Image (cartoon, rainbow, N blue to C red):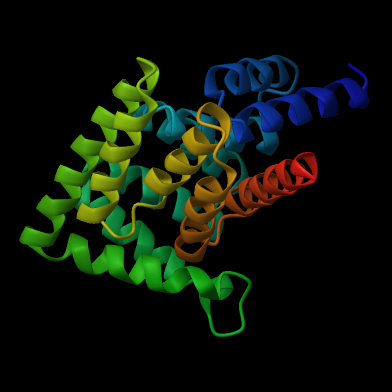
Length: 227
C-alpha cells in the first residue's frame, strides 16, 4: 500500500484521538494495523488508545508485543508501568517504573528527566499500603467518570474525573479527559487549556502538549470571532 495512505490513516487516527473520539481513532489505527501489523506506529498508538478507553488489559497486550519485537526501552517501560499501575498490578508497576527511571533518558539532562517526579511518586505509592489503596479509589472514580461521559453527562464526568485526580495527584489521564470534555463537548477553551496544561506539567506527554495547543487555538479563534 502507498506510504501516503498509511500516513493518512495515522494522521486521521491522531486527529480523532486529540478530539477525544477514541472509537474513531481506534478504527483508523486498526486500518493501519491491517497493513502493517508489526509497525511501532500501529502497536504504540493502539496501546495508547485502548488505555484511554479504559481497556488496560488490551493496551498491555499491544505494548508487550512491541517490546517483544523491538526490545526494552524507556518508553516501553514507562507505558507498561502506567498500564500495570492502572490495573492494580502493584509490584509490576513498581518494577517497571524503577526500570524506566534507570534508563539514560531519565538521567539528569536526559530527554525524559522531567518525568522523574511522577514516576518516583508512583514508586512511593506502590511501596505503601494506604497510598496504593487511594490510587485504587482513584481508578474506581475514573471508571465512573468514563461511564458518565459515555452517557453524555459531561459535567458529572468532569466532577468524577476531578475526584479521581484529587485521590491520586499523578493521575494525569483524568485531567486530560477533563480537558477533552471541556474542549469538545462544552466548548470552554480556557478550562480545557488549564486542564491540559496541568496534565502536561505532570506527564510531560507529547500528546497532551498537542491537546494544549489545540485548546489555545480554540481560544484564539473565539477571541477573533468576538471582535
